[in-house]
Structure formats: structure tokens, C-alpha cells
Image (cartoon, rainbow, N blue to C red; front, side, top):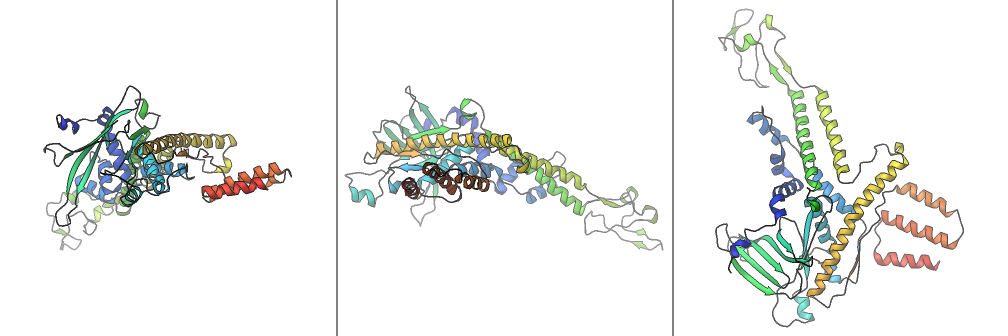
Amino acid sequence: MENADFIFRRSHSDHRSNRAVWERSRAAYAGGSDYIRTALIRHVSEIDLEFAERVRRAYYFNYPRRIAQLITQYIFATEPQRLNAHPALLEDFSRSGAKTNEVMRQFSTLINIYGKAALLVEMPFFEGEIDFERRKKERIRPYARALSPLEAVDYAYGADGKLDWLLVEEDHMQKTDPFTPEYKIRRRKLFTRDEFMIFERSSLNSPVRCVFRQQHSLGSVPAVIAGDTDGAEIGGGHYFEDIVRISDAILNNESEAQMNMIKQMFGLLVISDSFARSSDPVSIPDSSGKPQKFSHVIARSAAIWESPEEKGISRYISPGGADTRCIREENLALKKELFDLVGMAAQNENRQLQSAESKAWDHHHVSQFLTAKAELLEQCESAVWDIMRLYDPSLEKVQVTYNRDFTVSNLESSIRALLDLDKFSDSKTYHNEITRTALFLLEKLKKIDHNTKENILKEISLD
């Protein structure tokens, strides 16, 4: 195909400008020894052996992963409602075993990490007529998967404001034959409003081949691209980049604190100048005139000798404990700033001393942050179900509803207050309203499936 090579060279302007940041965010989320070697900063005066020891001793508190997952966990603490959703798709939304909630959790976490992500809907290729039995046997149904912006390398919107085309990059491991070695193939998939193409290249210098091309006749690109509307979508950077930088500062501070502790335990040897400059390093006489041997190796297992005049000069020095305590205090402050940065406002450590106004502000802050995330996910998932109906018109339209109530409350005090309110009136309507509120609090403690909840609400209405 003409200009097929260009397919592997092109990328979106956001991809070109943010690729390094996205890769760093991905590495910080993954963590492990590879990231420690990347993130630890070597001092200008630090010798190779000292830095190598510090790298080997370092450990990583993976705050970026915790924050990215924590936001998603809050949003999905109450399972979204999906009326008319096909049971098979709910249980296997990705055609690889991931449920709908799992795919949407992945999508949510990708947005938290990169600031944007995509949901791609595909359909297995098939030829000939299809009936119910074949559909079930070959699992011929649409499926969705979440893509990071590193995978959705380029795209464009049409004059109508909808996606005009999308280019997806992926690595495919070819290992269908157990008797031959596996090898990697780089693929780029092009989705337009009415066509789907797959391009492959086995190596960097190998020619690009179009290995598959098919009309899908959907009338639209089967994908949704979305992102946070704070900074990433208005030309600014995403907050996760700042999270990674603060996390890196904590990693480096913690590494310094650890090495300070090592130095406190083992210290640094200081010897007298006359001892170091001795012209006869192997035969210094003792008080009786008998020559004694000593070691020039500065190590914990080596010994030195000193004259009566120099007694007490040789010693070990080490940093004070206050230095290490200051580093740890700085890390605690940075950790609180981390969570405040993403809207998960750090509460006062002594909640009894926190004013009612302060608590209300914190609750509102967290609630609005999570509500905005939930609305975005609800819109994207609804669009995915609509795309699936384009592939398979037999599917019913799905009504998706995400939880919007993220009130952070003290359950114990809420239940106590609710019991007191129940004594306020004997009105049946008032009592039913109290019972519905109790059901809401019950869901905070134990997940209730949709059908059970509906039955409970019907029983409350009949009382």
C-alpha cells in the first residue's frame, strides 16, 4: 500500500510532547528495582561504590500506584448500575475474561496515570452466515479494552466533532507453534468510520505490510477518547507528573535517611595525620621498642596502632540522629501534600479537634473530585455500549448509572444520630424515610446487589 511506511512514523502532537512524561509515569506506577535505578539522584561528590550501595539498599514506597488505584477504588466502591446489559458481556467485557467493572477500572486508572485514555471496541472477524449456535460457540460478540495514550498513538476529529480515525500501536507475540521460538511483531491498527486495517513490521528496518483490511460499515470510529478536564485538556500538564516528582523526592529523602542510619551505626574512621604520614607503615615500635604491624586498609575488620601522645585522636564520626529525624519529618509533609494534590485532602490527625466547617470543606472537596471522575466514566461507558449495538443490533440499549454520592462520613456517629431521629416522630412516612437512610448506610458496610436493594425498598414502601 502506498505510504504505508508513514503509518509507523506518524504520531499525535500530544504523543510527541508528552511521551517522555507518560513513560516516566508508567515506570513510577510499575515501581521495582528498575525504577529505583532511574529515580535515585547521585550526589556530585558521591563515588561509584557509595552510590552503588545506596541503590542496592534503596526501597520504594509506591505512592503513585496507591493514589491512582485509590481514586478508582472509591469510585467503584458502589457498583455501577447497568440496566438491560447482556449478561455474557457483563461477565466478559474484553473477550479475555475481564468483567465490565474490571475493564472500566483499568480505564479509570489509566486516566489517573496519564490524564487521558481510550476505550476501543472491536469485533472478531468471521466469514459466512452466523446463527445463535455459531455466535455462542465461537464467542462472536463485540468486546472492549482500555488503551493508554502510548497505545493510541494518533487520531483526528472530523468537522462534526466526532472521531474521524484512530491509530493504535501494539506488540504482538507470534508463538502459535510450540516447536519454534516466539518473535515479536509491531502492529499498527487503523480505524476509520467505515474501515479497519492492520499494518505489521517485524523489525525496525523491515518493510511495512498491510496484512488485513475490512469494511465494518459502522459509520463511526469504534472508540472513545477521554481525559481529565483539569490541565491535560487545556494545554497544561497532568497532575500525576507532579505526584511522580514528589514521590521521587520522598524516595531520595528516604534513601538519604537510610544511609544516615548506616553511618550512625558504623561511622567514619578518623586517624591522626602523623599516623597516616608514617614513613615506616609496617614497623611502628610500641612502648618497649618492639616493632608492631598494622593495616593501612580502612575497614571495620582492620586495626590501627597509636602512640601515647596520640591517644584518643583516632575516632569514628557519624551524622547525628536529628538529621535523620528532619528527613523523615519532611517526608511526612510531602506525603500529605501528595494526597492533597489530587483532591484526597489529608484530614487533621486529631479529628476531634477539627472544626465542623473544616470537615464540611474536606468532605465537599473529596466528593466533588470523585463525582467529576464518575460522570466522565459514566459517559464513556455509555458510549461503548452504544458502539457495541452498532456491531450487534440485537443488543438492547444499556442505561449506565455511576454512583455520585461520595460523602465521607463517620458511620458510628451517623447511625447513632439516625436512631435518635427515629424517636422524633411516629409518622409512617417519616419512619420509611429513616429506614431508607439506614439502607444507604448499610451499603457503606456491605455491598448489596441491585435486585436485593430493590426488594428491600419495595418492602419498606409496603410497611
